[in-house]
Amino acid sequence: MSTFKAPKGTYDLIPPDSATYLAVREAIAAPLRNSGYGYIETPGFENVELFARGVGESTDIVTKEMYAFETKGGDRLALRPEGTASVLRAALEANLHKAGNLPVKLWYSGSYYRYERPQKGRYRHFSQVGAEAIGAEDPALDAELIILADQAYRSLGLRNFRILLNSLGDKECRPVYRAALQDFLRGLDLDEDTLRRSEINPLRVLDDKRDAVQKQLVGAPLLRDYLCDGCKTYHEEVRELITAAGVSFEDDPKLVRGLDYYTRTTFEFVHDGLGSQSAVGGGGRYDGLSEMIGGPALPSVGWALGVDRTVLALEAEGVELALPASTSVFAVPLGEEARRVLFAKVTELRKVGIAADFSFGGKGLKGAMKNANRSGARYTLVAGERDLAEGVVQLKDMESGEQVAIGVNEVVAELESRLG
Ligand code: ATP
Ligand code: MG
Image (tube, rainbow, N blue to C red; front, side, top):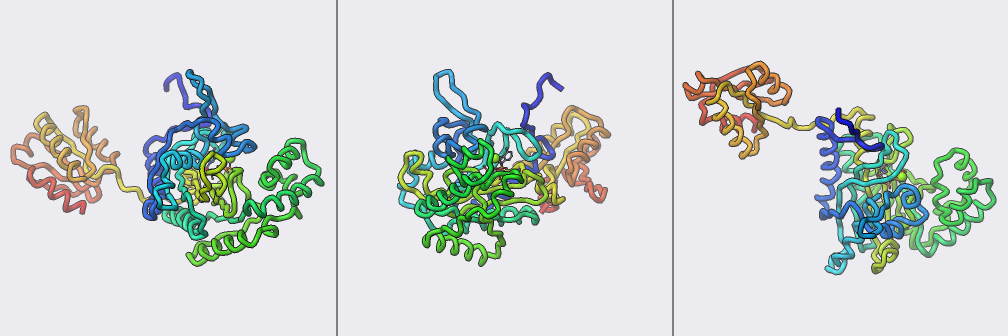
């Protein structure tokens, strides 16, 4: 061990577990790629003001969790705590919304940073795959995103997750509800912090995780009773479309989520095997965000799924992903001439797309076969002086133990046909 350890709240992804992470990212991205979403990558840090405005001044993310710092040049930056604000900023900066092809559909994958109290499923550096559909107000788009996330989780073999769904209303009906909720909250016996929060952003009080607070909230006015006709119709259509797609969900009238910029459709994916860090992903519509960061009106919807928690959910369900062996063929040379010949074969195999590896470091047969076993390779190629003198190498099937001599020039074709 070196003098240093990974910083608090972080962990390293190392083989073999790292293969599962890659596969999870891939599985979440696949349905997006297949549905017209283009890949976008933005910087790991942004102007701090983007998040203050785009995530919301009163959110935990901005007030407590952001890694904000001043550069040597005097710029005020922050490590990105989430993806949506950056992606929208980048889309506006590149004028993607003016190319005349709305919605602009984008997906991303990367690291995010929040200064949180580390615990299982809650880290200071974590990983998300996300999707944003920018510039269209269409219930089919909200439905599409929910269906694609459901498809991603199912393709991984996850079953014990639930989709919680709500509507947060819009700028017409939400203020009326907000006032009603505020009236209700003022009548409760709440601590100072919560009272302050109920003045700035009363909806977020509904999200309070404490039992004592939740008890007082029984009987609070619910948004669904205040939705305007436009929001009601919109939400009903979202519900119909995902139901027709065979995706089940639960109406959760108290679901608000942490961010300030959500409007109308809001949803969360929770997994019941994860204890208190149960949210594996979430998202919703954010019709007001573009204007909040200085852009034109661009109604949009998106989600972000947590890769770390999705991996924990797989563990909780005991799902083992069927990962292909990373190496199919392992070459074991005995002697200098064999090193030269087999190294060339390995290079040829790789060129035709067969995953191959080589016994490096001039090991003896025993040590080299141990490496071959560990590699998980289905076949080994072994060659010594006598084999080469006869123009052959030994091809061993590691599953059956069967071994045959193959002409040096037939090796690649033989393995291609065996590995199909
Ligand atoms: P929570 O309520 O658990 O704090 P959140 O509402 O802050 O979650 P989002 O901002 O919606 O989470 O991020 C989307 C997803 O990213 C979450 O559902 C979760 O899977 C993941 N995520 C968020 N914060 C963390 C973290 N600190 N460590 C690991 N994963 C995280
Ligand atoms: Mg959080």
